[in-house]
Picture 1 (cartoon, rainbow, N blue to C red):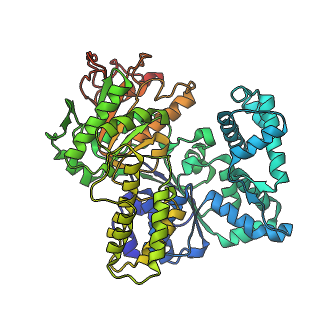
Picture 2: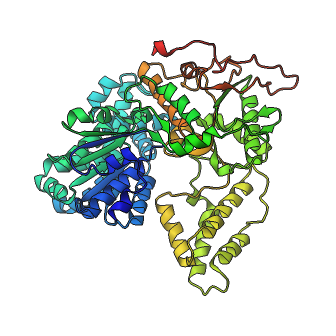
Length: 608
């Protein structure tokens, strides 16, 4: 199996996959195949006898990513590896050792921090609104993952939350902790704190854990918090068999405690660490990468991405698409990213909808198209404009696929049918059941609940049609149930709308990044150098989601917004003007033609 595991890896990927011992840091840029490297490295270690599967812990940040990692390892014949999130690993250890240490079961986990905070507020005579409670919940999370006491929190965040002064925020935090203890519950951050405390206080527990897990791999290491890093140190002990993988340019959760210094300083903290750089990008065409590289040029830890030879060859043969024109708006070609200025948000939304319509008319699959933005509020005009154009959408961050009532009902009926004799074929049975619930040959009009339900049922049918030969209805329903548990949602044939945070880890062939204006990206409350730098990384994440085409847009609006400073930093050498577009109202006037960057000429790079 060894040659098979390493086959298909490029030179740097192979270097990372064969570095099985000692501290290793893999600096993996966007689209460079980091998950492939992680799983092939583990598989190679097992195949060569360097690792025992049960002694390997692979840690990541989402249940979905952990599930994908386990699935890839199983496909390579490697089972028994503990691929988990930090929280899942810590909770499993708490549940295992707590009964022995405390004589009873571990405390329960809070399912809604805001609700408990509301009860705590009542107990001390406060009545903050829900938004304030959500912000206090975020403050609690930040304090704990930053490993600060309440006094330390006051020193770091002395300004309070909303209309609550810092004294009241502190009182509310104390009341929250008191109520939580009375109910014998832990929140998610407590799980990590309690596990770390257990390992520090109980030498026999630390010894057992370290004997169980000998080899550690941590994905998305730029996102670890001080608390997660401390827990990792306790798991590792004085050993050095650790591999961390990350990209400092994709650190977008600093507000939640993420600290990229743990990634950047890894070679200093682990003397003699092997450093491998992955900079060959297999996702994006060279012109898209040029925009990303310009945006991050000179930033700490920035990698210089180059397109894989196969993509570079494809790009060289690209020609403008004559069919990609709608409503007077020219859709982007498959190569040079564009930037376009608009008079107002409605004109911007309608133009983007027209461009997407042109892409679909030219053969693009809606599943491969996304519109990205900084804040959820920006989606309202888009949803309306796309619905008017007859284009169905899915908004990430809304209802999860398997939580939709139409999906739950379909899965329930499919499971019931799986225990009865099937008279027709497996796929025909799935189709018949979905038709009985409302699936028709032609979809309803876009923009309503009926279309959303239709798209969900159609997605289930496609899963059935794409299932391996010989799949039974029972196996199919088991697969649906397993996917629901890890939030592995199927892609519906819809255009995706998502915030830049929600887009992390995803990719599309065609990306439209809207609202690239001061006050939106960077957002208005980003005032310090560090906050603006985080906004730059968010823009970078959005840009690097694109495979073939990238469209950047902004509008002046009633507040006379200015183009984002990031457009000036990227410069006109890597962007072309998308044209001057009329405002949305009747008797519209045309916008002044932007420069190639959509902004006044000149560079702000010296101002960084």
